[in-house]
Image 1 (cartoon, rainbow, N blue to C red):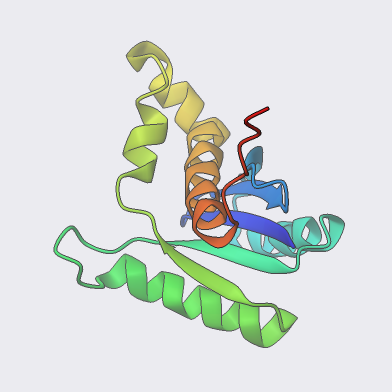
Image 2: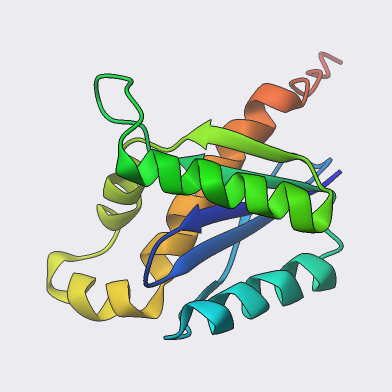
Amino acid sequence: MRCLGIDYGTRRIGLSFGDELGVATPLPAIVEAAPEQRWAALMAVIAQRRATDLVLGYPLNMDDTAGPKAKEAEALAERLRRELGLPVHLVDERLTSYEAESTIPKAKRREVRASGLIDSRAATLILQDFLDQKLPPPIADHA
């Protein structure tokens, strides 16, 4: 299993990677200006990482309803499945961007946001949540 975590946004796409070891690691975010360039960059990362599963953040509303952003995520998931034939797992991403941003000093948030660092940290939280649910916990050695 080679999973690519995706925090999709209209300006930036945060990315992370994880495998059977169960640890999500942030990757550089995709920050290209044009949507076609972001799509091409995403396809390149999926190919380079030889991803077998895509884990996409699913931005549900706080009341569990699917708003416009969740509908965008559903459409993206369908396009990825159709074009790549890979499984796409939607994972609740509520508050991941807030949690990721809270690790950045307030004075640096504006410049850091543009770099995509927060988006990739959010993708890492999304993917780690998926891996934690999917993989069995390690067996403790009580020697």
